[in-house]
Length: 616
Image (tube, rainbow, N blue to C red; front, side):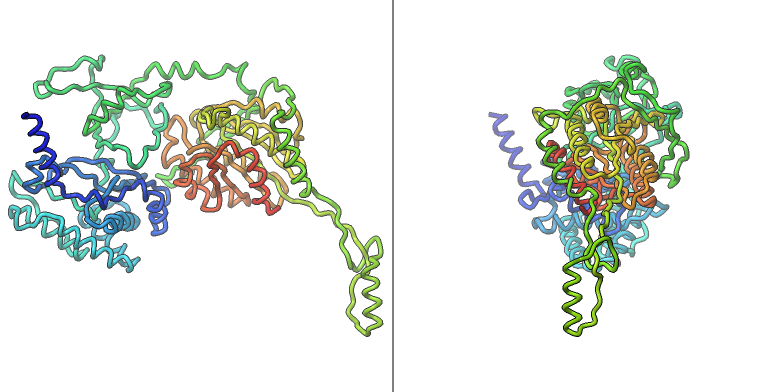
C-alpha cells in the first residue's frame, strides 16, 4: 500500500510542479536542416554543424513545488565553439509552439553574429550579439520582444530572492529588455547564494573552453589512433563531460578505496581503439545511466596498433607502387595556412590483372547507354547556304534566282560545306575506396559493388562519345600513406584490361579527400580541353586515423575544391551519404553535389548525370 500511495503522490506532484509545456514542444530533429541553412544565410560560419546540447545541472534557485518534486534541476544550454553550434534537443519553455520555434530561430541569429572570443564577459558578449543581430535584421525585433516578455514571465520574480541574487536577476532582465545597457553582473555576496537561473535567450560558454589542455606526455595529434566519431542523431541522449588525468592503477577493475565513493562504482574503459570491430554495448548502457562522463587522455600504446598493422597487405599482395610518391600540401583551417609537403601520395596499379569482359547483368543497360551516347560522338555535319564549299546548295541556288527575279538584292551563300563537330572536354572520375565501401546497401550489393558497376557502365557510355576520360580511386592511412589507385588513365583505351582493374577494386582504409582531389586536379590540368570535369564518388565525410576528422578534414577538402576551381576545373560530388546535405553545400556549393537516395541506382544514373553536367 505504501508503494502504491508513494507512486500516486510522485506522479501527482511531478505533474503539478512541471513548468514546461509538452503539448507545445518543438524538437531540434524536426528543424535541424532548416536551422543549419538559416545559420549560414544569416552570416554564420558555414563550416560549423548544428547538434543537440547536453543537459546539465544548473544549481539555480527553483520554485517550492519544483524542490518538493525534485524536478527542474537540469537544463540544456545553447553554446558555440569552433566546430559546433549546440542547441537544446527540445524546447518546451513556452505554452505556444510558435514561441518555442522562434526561440530556436533567435539562438541561430545571435550565434551567427557572435564574434571571436575576447576578454568580454559572458553577459556582455550575448548583449553584443543581440545588438548586431537586431541591427542587421530589424524584422527580428518583434519576435525578440515577444520572446523576452514570455521569458521574463517564466522566470522567478526577484522579489522572492535574496538581495544579491535579486540584483543579478534584475541585471539580466535589464540586459534582455535593452541589450547593451549592462556592463557586468553584480557579484554574489552570501555563501548560500544560488547561481543565476539559466537564460534561454543567450549562448553559454562552450564546455570545451573549460577543458584543460592535454597532458604533456600525450601523443601528438598526428599519432593519435582510433575510429572517427560517428554522428549522433539530434534527438539522442547527450552527456555532460569533464576532462581529468588518466588513473594510475594498472587494473581498471580494481576499485581504489575512497570513503566518499563507497556507494558508487566506477570503471576505466579504453575507447577510440582502431581495431575494435564492434562497440561495447555494456559500456554504452552504463554511460546512459551517468549524468557526467569523465574523459582522460591516455598516451600509452595498446596492442590494437600492432594488430592493425598486421592487417596491412604484404608487398606481394598489395597493389604495385608507381614512382616514389608525391608530396602534397594540406590546409590547416585553425592557422589559416597551407602546410607544404604535409602529405605523401602514392600512385598504385593493380598487380596481375586479368582481362575481364563486361558482366552479363550489365550488358543490356550498357547497350542502351551506348546507343544513347553514340549521338554525342563527333560527326561531320552539312552547313547550308555557305559563301564557299565543296558542293552547290541547290535549295540556296533556287532561292537566290527567285530573289533576283523579284528584284531583291539580299545575298546569301550558294554552297554546302562539311564541318566536324568536336566535343572539347575531359572527365576524371575519382572514387572513394575507403573501408566504409565494404558495407551493404541492399541484400545483394555492397557499396564497392555499386562503385564497380558504376565505373563499368560509365566507361561504356563515355567510350561511345569519344570523350577523354580517366578513372582513379583513393583511400588513406594517415598523412604519409595516401593511396591513389590508377584504374584507367586518359591515354589508355577502355578495354578488358581496364575492366579487369575495375573488377579488382577492393575497400581500402580511410578518406583523406583533400590530397586525392589535389592530385586528381593536377592530372586534369594537363588535359587540353575547354571543359574539365572532376566527378567524385563518395559515401561519407572526409576522415582519417589521425587528426584529419571533423572540421579539419572538411576545411582541407573545401580548400582543395576551391584550388581546383581556380585552375579551371569543374568539381562535382556524387554521394550516397544521406547526411551529405548537412556538409556538402559547404564543400562543393549548393549546385556542386547530388545525394543518391538509392545507391543501387548509381550505375544507371551516373551517365545521365554526366550528360547533364556537360550540356549534352
